[in-house]
Amino acid sequence: MRLFLVQHGEAAAKELDPARPLTASGRDDVARVAARLAAAGIRPPLILHSGKLRARQTAELLAQVLGTRRVEARSGLDPDDAVAELADRLPGFECDTLIVGHLPFLARLVSLLLCGVPDVRRVRFRTGSVVCLARGDDGAWGLEWMLRPELFSVPDA
Image 1 (cartoon, helix red, strand yellow):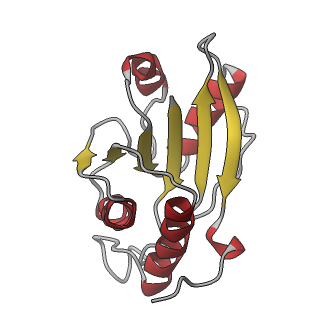
Image 2 (cartoon, one colour; image 1 turned 120 degrees about the vertical axis):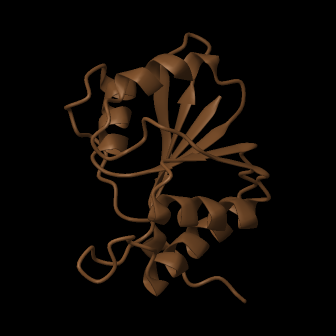
C-alpha cells in the first residue's frame, strides 16, 4: 500500500480571509503537481482531507485531475492533532490513499512512520508538496519519493 501525503496548496492569509481558501498561486501549484502525478499513473482510489477549506479545495483539485471519486473529510487530520491515532489505523487501509493535510501534522506523521517517533523531522514539506510512503510486506514504512510544485512547469491548458 502507498500513502501519499500532500500539504494543501498556498492559502490566503487569515487576516485577508478567515476561511483561508487557496490562492491563485496555490491552485496553480496543486494543478502542476496533480498533472505530474497523473502523468506518472498515480490514481489513488481514496482521498482524505481535514475538512478545512484549503485542504478540501486541494483534495478536490487533485481528485478532478487524478480521476478519484472518493473524496472524504476525516477528523483527526488538523494541524495539531495527534498522529498516533491515524498511524494505528493505517494497517486497516486496503488501498492506496492520498491524504491532504497541514503542518505540523503531516511532518509528525512521516516522522512517526519512518523513525518511530513523531518529533524527529526528516521531511521538509512546502505547500503543495507530496510525499509518497510505501508499506512493505513486513509492515514497515519507507520513503519512496517527494515532489514539490516548483520542480514542474505550468501544465498545458
